[in-house]
Image (cartoon, rainbow, N blue to C red; front, side):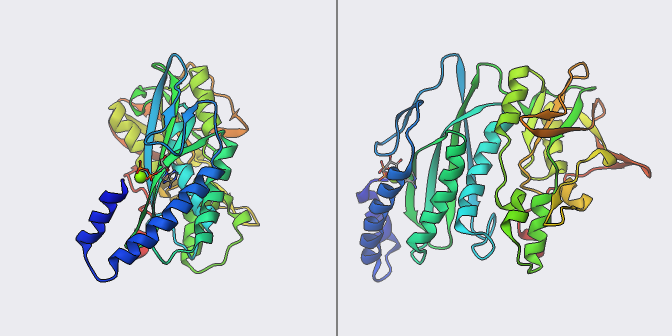
Length: 343
Ligand code: ADP
Ligand code: MG
């Protein structure tokens, strides 16, 4: 947004003292962007990054661009009293990287739109950036642009991640076929189980609950599956296994049978206690990958150091069901709705 346009927008809101707010914001916005620019790493695929009207990115020859955008909203995706600024920064980039992983792609650049309340301290923003850029660095990803504005209420973050994948090789949600086996990476339910503890007022040591506080997007796993041509369909588990499996099934026009006993339950806390099944089935923000593979393909037990577990199979009948010793029952899409249930 150009400065003139921003000024008009402020005057239109028109309460007393607005022009002061506008001036103050403009000053701090400039120095904030300068600081972000200093910290953002250059990258081989970045022709131009922060500082111009657009970033210029190099997409490798024979590849297609992947683009994803995700909100992280205070009160919805995080709470400042539960989540340290570094954790918010890390988790917000994980959302974008996990989408790139789910297509089997490699990330190139991130774009960060920030709306910040006036009351927020500079140190909160710097720590937020530290968390975000730390994760970006570990994937060789450049922060190549964004936007900065004042928020009337709460911290609002939108992250865009651009990646690439060899032409025609993106792993879509729509490719599952009857008979394909269904797999997940890692363990499920840690993030929602941790959130439940936070909601109960427990003070947690972040290092014992890393899957919630510092989830690692499964970029190498997704890329490995793509390079070996193993997966017929894939999605990242951001809304919960039940909901995300329904997404694959509806896009692929198939159904699924899941064996409850096969679902890998995550372990949390110092004692590495297994989480309850409800969190694994419906808990959001696990950022593991859910994928299908044709029956005749052998999926390694581990990819890039992460376990893969077969949990069921794709069916022609368009129902999603759970199978356990009690029999067969429907698995409705009951993906966990962030903070909403308890409020
Ligand atoms: P414009 O008016 O063209 O949108 P801005 O003043 O908003 O320009 O931004 C200047 C430069 O700083 C641009 O390259 C933009 O991408 C970058 N930028 C602005 N805000 C952020 C941010 N929060 N994170 C990263 N880059 C940012
Ligand atoms: Mg701008």
